[in-house]
Length: 298
Image (cartoon, rainbow, N blue to C red):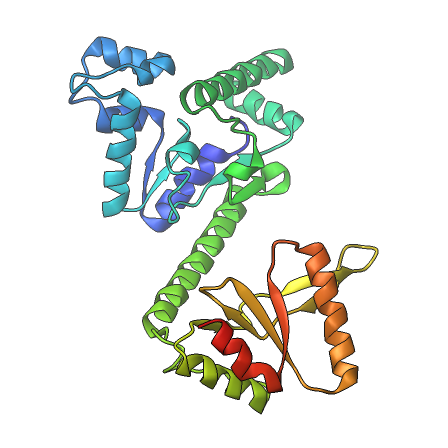
């Protein structure tokens, strides 16, 4: 209340052509045909009543969760309130947004909306926030103010409704674009590295990969980068990406030549990596030892 959350939701719904479902709309849409007047009243007034069984023997909350997910599979919608961030917490397609504003700003808006005094506006705000927090905590066991529940938190102290809508729309477009790229990448992904070899940096890596393939040892090329040095501000200044990872043996392999300069440098990196990541298995391998190593891993 007083943060423009409802206003942004309605404007966003109009912009996208999506249905906006608040608590009252949720009750009318999903419970009106299956709940009696007493149940509807309790669902409007009591969070704990959602945990009680309905006529089919499942809790009202589980029924609502199923109904909302069925709806979401058919259409996009904007859910406002009733702990929807918890109901769709594990849904990768859901976008969780919290709209906030400083208390003085919220009180000022409530004064205008209800033609209230400062004292009454503060009371309205306190009561609303308290009931909302209690409802979500009782029903879902979460703190709705915890930022970990949201992808985006908008402070509308100096934002208009239109600006808030524009930000959400921009985020939605970026997510859609990323999702399409993920789908396209998955469709084009090589099913086997044997038919889609990476670009190796030197002939030794190419030869090692060929030997691994010959012995049918599954591998990945530079699959992970390990930060091993940071500056005083916490920025990574040195990272180490081992050449190969042998999947079945959970072991990283760093190839090297007999050049003492490179051997010393790589030994230092491996030593730091082992100190910082004690659970990581890594070996430095010379080209002359390729065949011996591979036969050990057969």
